[in-house]
Length: 141
Length: 191
Image 1 (cartoon, chains in turn purple, green):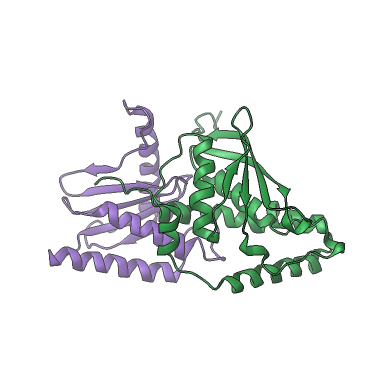
Image 2 (cartoon, chains in turn orange, red; image 1 turned 45 degrees about the horizontal axis):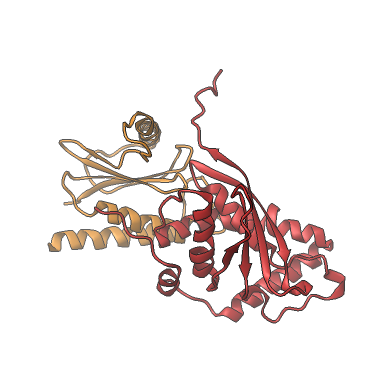
């Protein structure tokens, strides 16, 4: 049983650059995932404006009945967010790990164009390993 | 979860993979040499290293790695940015610390002084290339990195004040903040 349902990475302008589906529930086609990413980007931006506290950097966690959405935004504007089972722990740590994998396997790839969709095999490979490790750790508890 | 504490330059430097210093120096040297052969003009090479291609492109990609591995939080002001670049940034990527000096009155311009520079081990500039800023890649990297930070993207101008290859006693980079661009959402785009 997958604790993570899906992973999205959006660039600073709100375009979807990476989408990976892990669960059997909520499978989306490309158009839907693009739409969802833009929607999230806008909501994240609006939340910064609406926040009553100063210096708010946007939504970090969205909790619903059937899922949790954890979002991490780097200081460069790239957003990493994961949709998972309600109550899944350590998603922030996982997002940080994914950010590091992004900086290593995507940004250092000289053929990767900035802000464009990610098509890097090494990134996919290491990402699967990271998610798998996380899943094993989760079951082990 | 509590935010992770920012790591010191030494801690990050110790935790990442290292490459042979000579390999690094010689690779950089080969690249500069090839640029000189291809472009012939010293000024053109200076521009390539900094603005047009090499340095700037490295900078825009390096900033994410820097932020991911060092866990620094958003800098409150430009002074903090300068310290972070000198203590954590330079240490992490070049293994040497720079010092921050010569702040101007408004606090928008500072100097980064490097005593030790791994890029220039074994290098001597011949007379024909005296105008070359051998380490211009560093200017480009700093410029590119600072521009990519979201919300307070900083446009800077980075120039060489002292260069040991030209006979000075240390390497000094002057970083000047031209303007800070707060990221605004283009609400008026469609009008």
